[in-house]
Image (cartoon, rainbow over all chains, first blue to last red; front, side, top):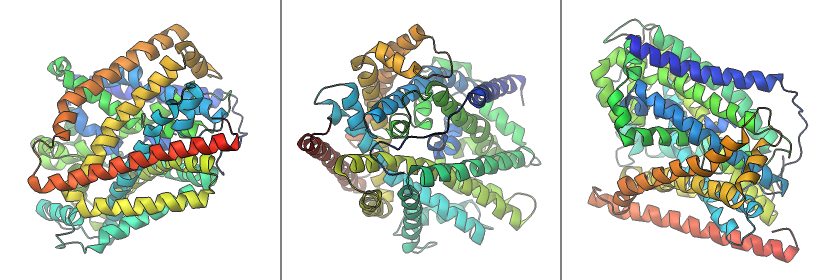
Length: 44
Length: 499
């Protein structure tokens, strides 16, 4: 694998994995309330 | 939501697009489109859904009329019913192939086939007039089984059906994909090494950045992969409460989808094909389309894996199993807007709505099986599954941002947000950048594809009548849905319910 191709792959993987990791870290850190309302006009 | 977004396109469409549009450099316009079109549209759809849900609307006609108090608004929302119903029907047919190929992998039906044999295996399934491999009833059986599974899940409702499917299906999908990626990347070199496959995927072609078609291909890929412009995200978001977060959750949905697409989807088919057939053959295969890549080349790869028959079986089950789970978690989402519409406007019970939509899907799906080779499905895929999505997304931005008001739209998205969104930047992107991208995309596609497609340029004469019939069925469904919206609002007015 060439250095240029490797650099692009690392950039792409780091971007998506970093973004995903950051989002889930923030979501897990947040105080999630699991209560749910009935859906609008539909049966659960 | 992530189950809805992660679909067949992550594993079959993305690698082909990347290879055909500049390799590594494709990632630059791809990520720019993600930031300027994909994620903003994700927030727009979640915003429309949560706002509409507060007024009891689970589909776009009602959601649009909540945002824009004009009699036309509800009719614009027809796109959210039309796209999802049309795509649901033909998507279930494609999904049924993945179920069939999972079964064939277990049964060992493809073991020992060469390239010609594998092609014949697929084409006989797609073409009922060629029963050389598959009996005529086989595609119907797997289609019926796929529809049955889909409608069984949606009949159970959101919590007991769709959420439960996603909780089971998504981990299996990621597990299968991760195991296959590890296997592919640790393969001994044959025609080439798997890392040469990744090299082929990611080698930058800087000249590609100067081609508008590459930027549009990137925007198009982002568009399809995130399932924006369908009305499914807003249907799911209608179940949220007023102060539930949509900013971080929407971003997490997009990010999860991108991980599945870039890290897993990008490391599977192309590296595997390059390993066994070399770079030259991989170019030809990639140009042949996603179905050839997924249903011909990958089984050929599995047949050559070291370890014997059981390894080929396990790899086949994992590959087609992951495609099936990617497909079904998306298709159950597509059924949701139509079901919500019938239940909230006509007071139908879920079982009745499911029975009616399932009957329609079986009937129209049979036409896809009968006339697949003559382009019946291609027409639906283009007009609803491609062009219709851009039209719907543009309408969503116009209604939510321009007509509801940019400040209201920004406030709606930031309400309950668990992350900071700079309001002025968000307002600028939503008001100008995202609509500009969509208009350019729609304009380009109209000139480059829609007009030639409409005029049947380059079509075989024997296909023309079937393609027009296919359009006729779509047009009839479109008019039927407009009529149902009219009927629903008359009924609401007569009952004194809010319009």
